[in-house]
Length: 423
Image (cartoon, rainbow, N blue to C red; front, side):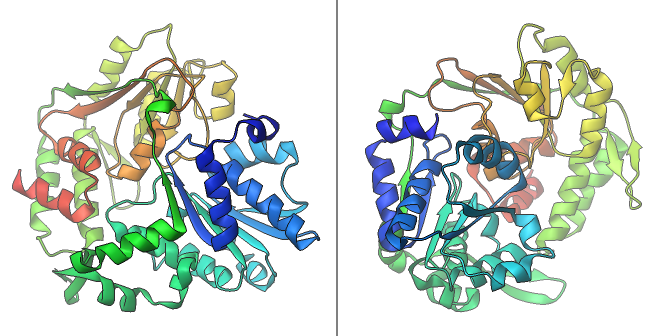
């Protein structure tokens, strides 16, 4: 939808969202993907320029995918942003230009896909926080604000200085607001925040209600069916897989999250027929049976998005499907030149494929619920009438079952690790 059409068809919640941004000045729009949070934000920005009576400086920070696939081709070309608007990827922002961004006087900061700042100790979080505390208007936009717990949401509020949360340190806030569990790592015992204290939940919900707008799908949206199917691929456990799985147990319950992640990743690789060696080379164990399933089940009359995790998966998919059938370029896929679009699981934000494909296959699945949800919403969106079919390929009796369970349950890495140990 073009902006000229939007201003005649604005929904009430979008007007409420625009007004929230204008009145609170530091606020967030947490809309489900496809519910239209970009145009209310642009409405607010344009209104600010009118109120100021001068050209304003606007900084928009987002993921590389969002800027390349949505902001530039869909928004910039309409010439609806203020003249002094600067689009910067999160990776570019923390690079050589970070000092320049800090020196500039910004009237408006927009952090699109603001879950990119949910890690309180990340470079992009620290940079955004420094800019936010001295910027009059700061807006956060995302369809997936919550990953593992409400602490993810607070970290975004802190980075954006919503309700003056930027003045609190992570340690101070978590000690005041959160329950903790005790963990053990290489450096001894540590406390890990796991959620908001029950006694403080009413106050926490009041904060969210005042400064954040949550918009979910409703009956009026008439969303098409979403059919999710798990295809279990028979798998005979190899010695490499058994050793990798044993590695999960051997790292111990109190190992660091990174150590657990590495152990799980090794087992995930092994059941898919390869291992990454320490020098980054790939050791092939056996052909991946998922390739056989794809070759036997893909319909030549339909178009597919196939999602993978590791580069070794991508290489194998490219070998199975000649270049005339597949691409990893979203724009080329939209032009209709290819049957298959290959996407790495992290490339899941701010582009629309609802009119180009209705089948998405997770060849190898990342354990991140946010990545999974963002990816399916590239196809499953408002305004379509054709059901979306999601297929998750899973080697039977392997860690891929626990990874899928973790995605469905929005579990954090520790819970994923413990579920594998219990199995």
